[in-house]
Picture (cartoon, rainbow over the protein chains, first blue to last red):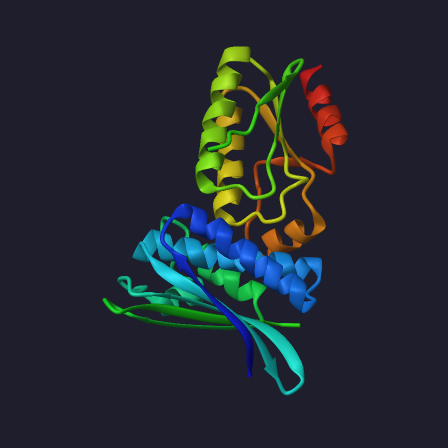
Length: 133
Length: 118
């Protein structure tokens, strides 16, 4: 069940700060503690920056979830960019882009409870993560 | 766009980062710090992040780079005021400030630099 959703366009640098502020607000309103609020805001920041750097534009969707009695915050970052080549090497830590995609993607995965990425050359990338309350 | 002031306290420069730093502000600040170092010949730099709620990999890299650059210009950097949630998040993110010294707060950071400069 979805309680609340907002879609934030990521088109320029200032949208990164706007997106993570919105995420932090939502996390606070849902009752997440300070450390989780910071994890969520930082994860959104990494995902938004990846969108700008690699795809130039995209969007981030934030939703509060309620699933069998527990609440969670879902972050979906989507773009129609070039896709991430060697995604498996990025995820297992053996590949690192010179501009730091490895740290952003891998780091975000460590900050979240659920993390999945779908990417296809020339089609785009979709990263979905959830932090449970 | 707002710029962050670079303050001078005797032989030490002090900058205090704001709650929400946009990328451009961070890049401008790096340049301002280095030009102020060149102009004043300061031997120390304190970067205060006590008011910062989010340090992502970009801002972390800027801070680390600035410390390296300041070191090339003969100044020691101390990062002060990292909030508990930021310390936890930075560690999980995998970002380590390998060449930046840290102190709990401004006062302890200044004491560290004072010991260097004596």
